[in-house]
Length: 316
Image (cartoon, rainbow, N blue to C red):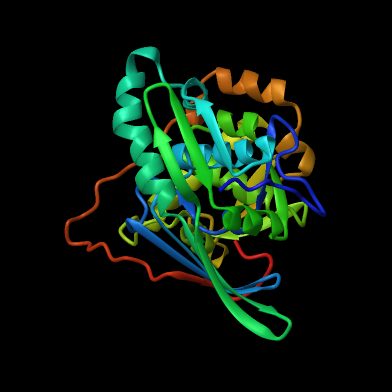
């Protein structure tokens, strides 16, 4: 059944190069690096606005392709003003930079799985008190999908669209800047900075960053910090942040990094796109993939427990 989308207080994705995304989907580890701690994500939030005991379930979704296609589908729905739409697959090829000689295999081996197994796994449930009556609601992201060689037809859940649109704390995600960030660490840090810009200098502890990136306990702090440092270097080179510093354990110069202090503004995060594109085109060393090191086999990987927010509006 087709659902006509209307918005009341605000409009989502009203510009071609932007889409507005609730903080709930940005600050929490819903979209993460490929090598996250587990194959399934279960996130609980005690309270967000009028909603309580929110549960967000999905298989592990990457912050690169899965996030891009998720935004693409949401943007399609809002631009079409309908939860049911059809598009030419060339739009996906362009979005994900799929070369012509790889397109057939991409549809068969990657895209169908992305739609059928990954994005279709997104399941939301929450409790809401209306007129003194508590109601528990739940719904999926995708209700129906049909993919062939040339086109894709999608029907999103109207309940998901209403949930997405009614959430507080919307942040504009500039798609052209997102496209410059091919590295998972760069992209997640940028998303974090977009939705945490209360101060001129913002503080991110290594402990909180590990939760947001949902990295395995097997990854050493030293390796993780090095990847964060390298990603911040690239964001600095692009002009997205002005500077960053590291607080060391015990104040020692060679001590363990405990917190990253990062300076940025709305202007650095959103403007001067042409300059940022020119810097990215130079393919600087700072833009290479995160560092990977072999771990000792004696280190056992354990899954982190599901993440629960305590209701603080400024959690990382």
